[in-house]
Length: 464
Image (cartoon, rainbow, N blue to C red; front, top):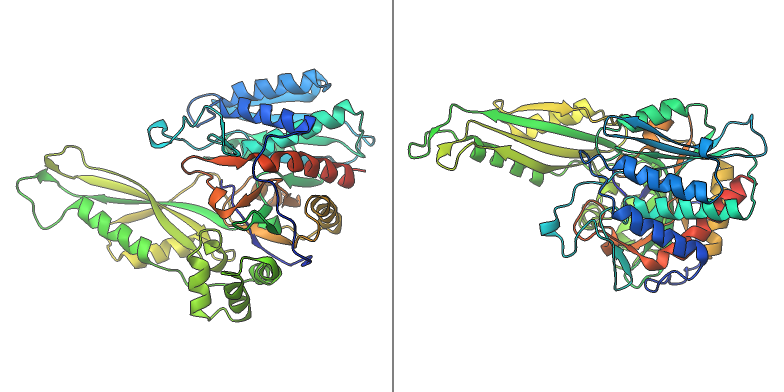
């Protein structure tokens, strides 16, 4: 659900400082140029829930793959309601071996054009970036993966076993297509997720850590509802549903869940600190050494890229209520979105929200959106060795840490079936560039050429 920088697990490498990565300039390689064209085409298709455009984008990808040498019978789209999921099989030498999957998602969250500086569904190249909804989450890596597969196909590469591209169509909402896709591909051996993991850059564009997603926090939405008899606005009484809900949401916003640490987050902090920005590295070391260090926890929590490292977070995200400007509100509903630290059941967080709010008139219900309580994938030596090679070629000496993302991705549904899943995105970002789900979403042009090469090295290595 979110294309974010990762919280992590065990540090694998912590070597010398990596070189700065280019943040401007158009792609120069044929693969990079093709990836940019695919990305621009994908951004222009508004694959938002309810618009019925996921099949349109799937058809465009299918046409490209078939033109690039894929058999038409190997490229399919399975419709589910107004959306669906897309698969493309790349045959390998051993057709009986369980396939490896490369997963991503084609849908994006809504974007109001009036709020953006540029039309969110018109790709704009400006100041070293590609702007547009989905540029980062997750069409950028979709484009790099597809361009890589086309390059490999044209070069006649044959993997050791089948590789299947599997792109869901409602990862940002109910994950119905994700569950169906996971069911259909339940015989897979391994999943590489293009919607998780990735490189982190400091404000000067220097890469200081690469995270491999091996787990994720549990995603949860809770609906808060309050009803009231209402009445004429000229005769206010002792209660007001809008005011009461506002008070409740303010309490949720102000509440800070207790700090937590796990072997995953501890090792991420320890592995990232040697090359992390100077202003945050001391807090990383201090919190890893002593989770009771309040100052260190506060310093990490103050930065959006690290707030999910130290605790569960819950924030109000939507409010709807009232029926007329001159009437007292009769009902109001709100959504509170939580990213829950692993090991904490969603029911426990729901009970805590009720305690925080302290108003029994406000009902709190869990809204099922297809997510499940998260589990982790045990690390695989072949995956980590592959990442070490691919990232080492791109940014020599970069610290590599397996990790846990702070939000939900399609990986959870494969992990629940016992299929190891690892996030290995090729996007390298500064903190200020992580605008997934936000205004003026963008992808640095400078990540595209090396991103295609990263995907090529990854696939050639793990499927040699």
